Amino acid sequence: MKERYFPHNKKLYHKIIEKEYQKGRINHLIEFASEKMKERLLKNLDKPGWWNESFDYLFSRLNEEVEELLSAVMLKKEKEEIIKECADIANFAFMIASNYRQSN
Image 1 (cartoon, helix red, strand yellow):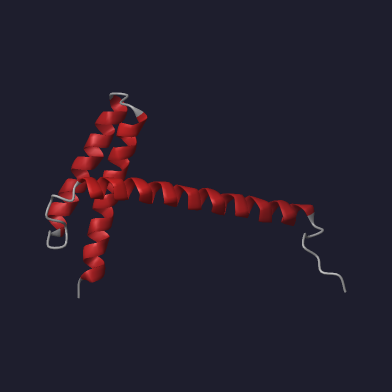
Image 2 (tube, one colour):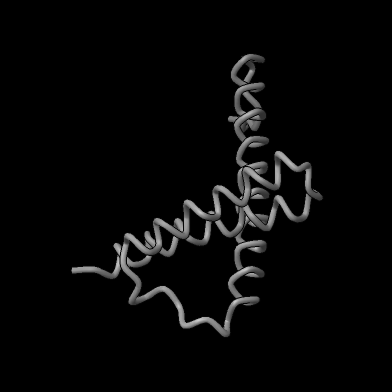
């Protein structure tokens, strides 16, 4: 019997193609975001780190970064500046996640 690589149902075929396209976009976004997050973390290697920081402190810094993003958007800053603020927000969110992951 001959193997079939494509479904005969065109709707199903298009759903499969769309899903694969979406997976590609998600993978691209994750690669882009992690690259920008890493750049921002490496830029701040001189700072002590987040491992011993409290949730309150990290959440406060997260909110400060959100305010910086809002300001950058409202002031129509350059695209790269807005991307940096987004990376900072993601980093603080994952600092919180990292600390919760390591807690007992």
